[in-house]
Length: 239
Image (cartoon, rainbow, N blue to C red; front, side, top):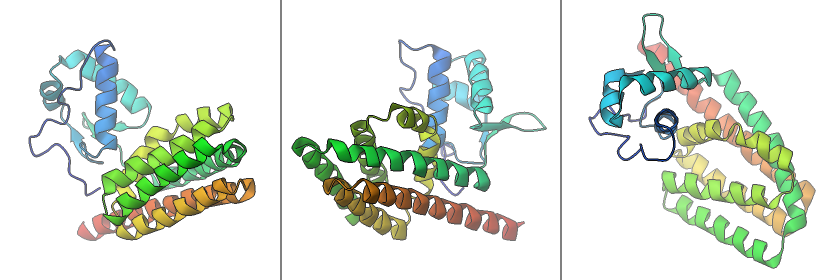
């Protein structure tokens, strides 16, 4: 993907290693979030010596973290040795969004029963923050404020099973979100979609809330697929 990585010499891991977590856990989390944030670009090669220097650790915990990252699909081992940040599989991305739509739709439905005056006020506040971010075309802020809206709705729900399942794909969702949040057309859509979700929740209409949430997430999935398809076409034309 055409996102900037750490190739300009800047250390994307400054201050990442802190107690009390184990060094290996911190390295694993630092590399994973550098991938999610686009600091380590998709398809980019991971240079072990560079990571060791950036993180200020020895090679052993870096190599150990590679094993977990590979197992979870964040990085891919090359036949010739070494690793790259894993390319995104379009088919898998579609499945993630289908699962996410179903889970978050259920959470939005359940949240309708818990719209107290305080919760109404907080939902409106968070939705307005997202609206302001979209108006000024601040992609990073849109991602953060959108995440806040979704988190608040999930927290309102008593559906612990749906929340637990959603937590298992949320890191992948963050990566996908980062690839589409700067699309101007998508920013306008996100603002309107969240308005509809909020309106349904404020009306305490579970059917409308579930439908609005599902449609929002499925549209996000289609936007991601379009970005990935266009990127694949550009690569093919350049070969």
